[in-house]
Image 1 (cartoon, rainbow, N blue to C red):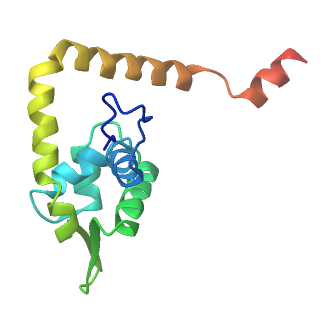
Image 2 (image 1 turned 30 degrees about the vertical axis):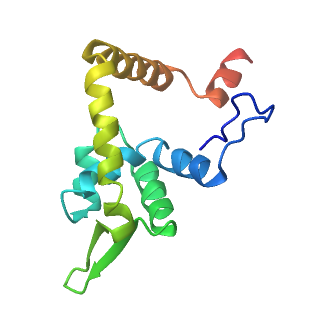
Length: 143
């Protein structure tokens, strides 16, 4: 990840592969999607129901991103109506140990109270945003 620099006068550098991997897995909701799919195939609605506060748009975006990276496969089941399921590829399943390590770290270092505070703060911000008048309505009200 970083070059050894002790006493060598070299500047540290970040491995591009490591950086890409961390940005990919660390993306909002990405870890949750992968963690759920480690248990097997799931449909879109099942994923959405299992991930609190994720929107349809964000879930679609994350699934497309993971498909592009060949971490998730989109399976179309030819039934009537057509059924679409998502599952991890071999590349995706290879993340199991990494996510388990993050989980162990979280159990030790992330308090439940801090996690609950973060969720409630986010919900409060979203509620405040939804109760604000739309910008066009505000402009009309000023006239």
